[in-house]
Each structure stands twice: as C-alpha cells, then as structure tokens.
Length: 165
Image 1 (tube, helix red, strand yellow):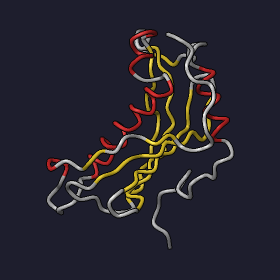
Image 2 (cartoon, helix red, strand yellow):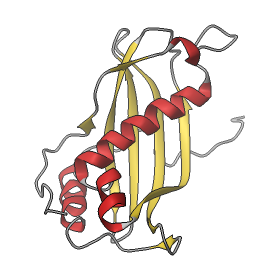
Image 3 (cartoon, one colour):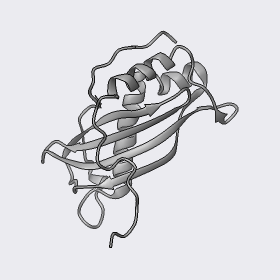
Image 4 (cartoon, helix red, strand yellow):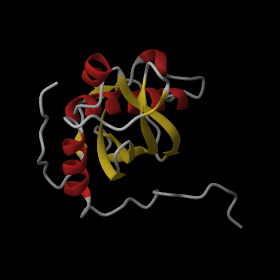
C-alpha cells in the first residue's frame, strides 16, 4: 500500500450525493430508521476509502475498522428521491481507534436529516483482535485528526439518552 495523503483542509470530508431509494420507505411514508444507518454507513465507507482505511486496507493488510459504539439522532424526515450527502468529521484518533461524527445533509430541503457519532477500532481480520493501524496509514489518520482539531464539535457529540424532565 502506498503512502496516503497527509494533509487535509480544515473541513469535514464531504461524501458523494445519493438519493433515498423507494425500498427505504416505511409504512409511515418516510425513510425507515434502518436505512439512515445504511446511508450513513455507505458514506463512511466512502470516507474510509478516501483516507486509506477502507477496502484497500482490508485487501492489503487484512484489517479494517469496526464500530464499537454509535449513536444516531434523527432530526428531519427524508422522503423517496430526496438527495443527501454526508460530512464526516474526525473528533479524535489514536494508533488504533477513531472517534468520528457524521452529518447527513438533506440537499433538497437544506437541513441536517440525521447525525451519527461513532467510535471505531482497527481490527486484524485474521486474529479478530484490535490492531494498530499500519505505519503507511497512521500518518493520514493523524493528519486528518489535526486538520479537524479546530472545527467546532456538533451539539449532539456525547449526548446522553434519557427522558428530560
């Protein structure tokens, strides 16, 4: 695997524009919660490929990121055919973990449809145990972490779940 990009702009990674598919619509007439996760996860795969920890890492090193914990906030309904993209921000990272935040943008309405926060860990797929990112990938992750360090943290980061009284 070649050395990846080691400098990034101080802005989230913007993913490709996609649209809500007909089979993503539930009996309430809007996008089902499971498909928000699918849409965000597919966008994360794109971002991971962009920074070198996606499919190429699996192929070259037999390792890749796995989610440890995640939280999603559903902020606006999405309907069939509406276009969206995602903005991926790295909040923190170390030698084998990454804390990230994703905004799912409804491009037709100009709103944030959902947010997704996740902590992932790099996993050796043969040993099925955590592993350090390879030396040819870690500088890219650290450069992205540094580029995003000055960005404001979204309000939903670390949100506690419960009934507010």
